[in-house]
Image (spheres, helix red, strand yellow):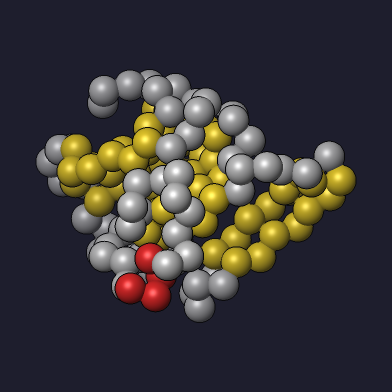
Length: 123
């Protein structure tokens, strides 16, 4: 591993890759059987403390000390999705990002239908 890992998650559908986040602020994608790095994403401005794949493996979320949660898509982005992607992330990679947090997020869940739910309280 190129850095110290804080969190890792195995792709649930095929189990052929895993993601890892850590102190270097990158989220890295590895081939499960060889350990070879097959991709990485940069977008956080602080250590990445939590990463999780969605149940179908089509996306994953990363949470950072910088106060942001980013949702990354693992495959190609359709044209409709591209129009709503934030301009400050890698084109076609970030599905959603919260840059300004006014309430504390206590939990985050991506269900099988791809809808998200959160429980928030005042910070």
